[in-house]
Image (cartoon, rainbow, N blue to C red; front, side, top):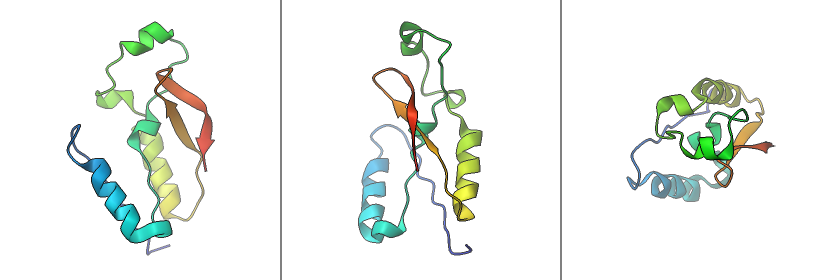
Length: 99
């Protein structure tokens, strides 16, 4: 699938990332897929809820970026992925995935 293009949108809080992504989604409709880096926060089942609330989620080590990169490669090659989901209410990955 040589016509697949990956666009990364990064920036600080309030910098307009979501606004830009929404504009791209409006422009390209069903021809665009969006992966949120937030879905790739590492799972911390070994920690209590209280411990998880004190983690630094702004640290690059908080993410499973290797998994996200692999998922981007798979999508670029036309393969389906099981994207993890993150549940902010429990400060941990949810059990479900997005297809």
